Length: 275
Image 1 (cartoon, rainbow, N blue to C red):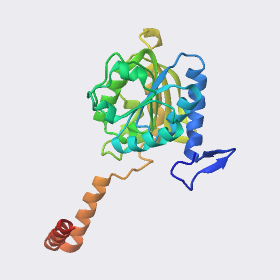
Image 2 (tube, rainbow, N blue to C red):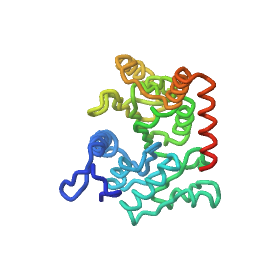
Image 3 (tube, helix red, strand yellow):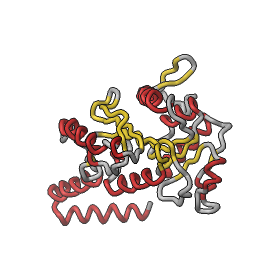
Image 4 (cartoon, one colour):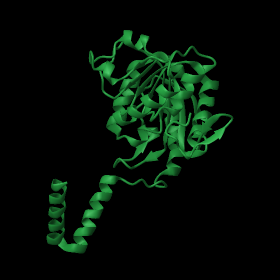
């Protein structure tokens, strides 16, 4: 379905595709070969999955239970998109959560697609077979990334999986966010680690939870990633909106002087109140 009637989609054999979907299909193919065909996966959780394009592939092809965690605005889009795509699935949304302010193990079992905002109270009995974060941690500051890693490492099944696809370096949040510095604990073994398909500034890192010391090689791999990553330092300059606003204010003060600038700001504030 061309949900939203997008003019950017191409119809091919009765399905609609765009460039981003082709990347998702390529990622999915890697996950299928490395995990889905050889492991019992019954559920997955995507953090920051947007409107649900990547998640749709796992639900449609393997009928997996899905927990989505994202900002409320994205949840509006994903709930609409996935309901249109899977009208027969049982959905659990924020209105359902508000009844008890708690996602229970029973609600998790009886729902097919669960879409919630961050920082909610979730039953610790719930365990996730497969976590995904694709191109959204790179938009967060390190404190938020750390909180999500704590969440993943608490709720992942004892031999579950984590797919991390993010920029080698991202600076738009006011600090350098780098994949090699993501706060993995030691209990991960690396399955696949490589530059992402057709986006060599993004890394594709697929890992498995492991308490076997001989298998725990994540820190060694992060050191290897840092060597690749260093080639990208400073090459992709990101615009920080708050920094841009600050620089613009300084420029206007320089052009008009402090008194005229402050007068213009006061006029703007009065007009905003009238509106």
